[in-house]
Image 1: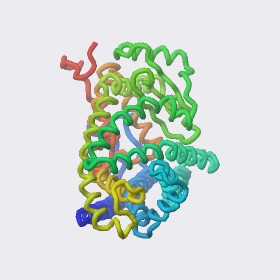
Image 2 (image 1 turned 180 degrees about the horizontal axis):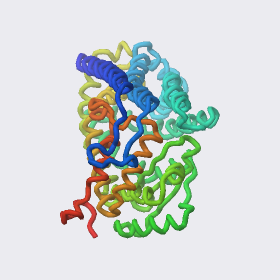
Image 3 (image 1 turned 45 degrees about the vertical axis):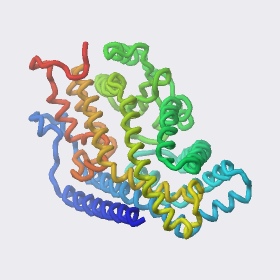
Image 4 (image 1 turned 60 degrees about the horizontal axis):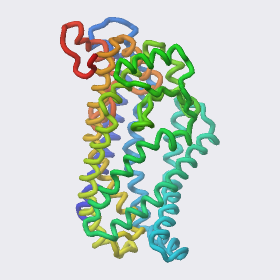
Amino acid sequence: MRRLLKVGFVLAAVAVTAVVVVSARGAQREAAPQVTGSERAGADDSRFQVRITDEMIRHSRIRDTLYFVGIAYSAAVLVLLLFSGLSRRIRDMAARGTKKPFVMAMIYIAIFTVAVALLEFPLSYYSGFIVPHQFDLTDQSFVSWMGDQIKGLGVGVLMGAPLGALALLGIRSTRRWWFALWLGSLPIMLLMIIIQPIVLDPIFNKFEPLENQQLRQKLVDLASRAGIEGGRVYQVNKSKQTTTMNAYVNGIGPTNRIVMWDTLLAKLDEDEVLAVMGHEMGHYVMNHIWKGFGFTAALAFVILFLGQKLHDRGAAKWGPRWGFAERGDPASIPLLLLIGSLLVFLLSPVISGYSRTMERHADMFALEMTQLNEPMATAFIKFAEDSKRDPRPHPFVKFWRYSHPPISERIPFALSYRPWETGEPNRFWKE
């Protein structure tokens, strides 16, 4: 348990340090002159300049601070459930409803999930509703926003209750439960990747084939050049929730698809859309979904291995005080989640670094295939200004949580990466 407490202290120290660093960075940047995204590329062109505003800096500082505060807040909720005895009382309540351990675990998880959602609601409301409205990043009404939150909670309960009960069954059944959970998690993760585009995502938004037939044909042709035959390209009504832009690839096999937000289609010109979608096609062609699955599986292996060691020691020492003495007792779920979330948090730089590498490779693929350097650069500028995020985050914030290279790096890279002009071979796209 001492190790768990040490991890907790590390978490608190990192969170406090991050808040101080983010705040100090914001104060420095508010007085800084305008910075252009083209400086490192050596291009003196206003088209490639990000117009950095005080609002952009303030919004970025709030979001970065909320990330670290949110980690600490969620951990505090789990600690509260343990030390207050609420977890034990929820378990006892579930036990009064049934004598079957599996069903009892499902009832506990359902009640526990709702309780955590209620305890975390103040921060969720501020970060998910107040802040986006404060910076004009959404027009969504509170009723619509709450509808999405309730849908998400419902999906979490329906999926989490049986899966969590299965995990507890595995913990009770075998001494090396970390390995059993790891093996069991692999097909479940794969199933989630497969069903997300066709089962989960449509719960929140409407997906339909791209309406612009001229653009659709160009995207199909581009997909064919990328080696993607019969590419499925969809648009989604994300303007329901946000004014910002995005595009992504998800699914595997028959459910694999490329998705563009309707906000992106409304704000980018045709060449910018083609450049951005070339990036997404790069993820597809380079099998980043499969590579991400393998990377996640490797992380899960490490986290579960370390997690059992910390959990078993903590449960042996503090379990009776918190209301559980046996492995797999539902009342121990807050401890399991606390350990898991702390380990994931401490591994965040590894996760973020891996993701940034994949994103850079996708940028390179898109530039090699489309040679739309300037449209890609201007698309990045629009992304930065539209989302009101500082294109030059503090190095610590980038290191810890940025899944993509900062815009201040992507713009000059987009402008300067031209291997075809020097006769160098492409690294990723092969004709």
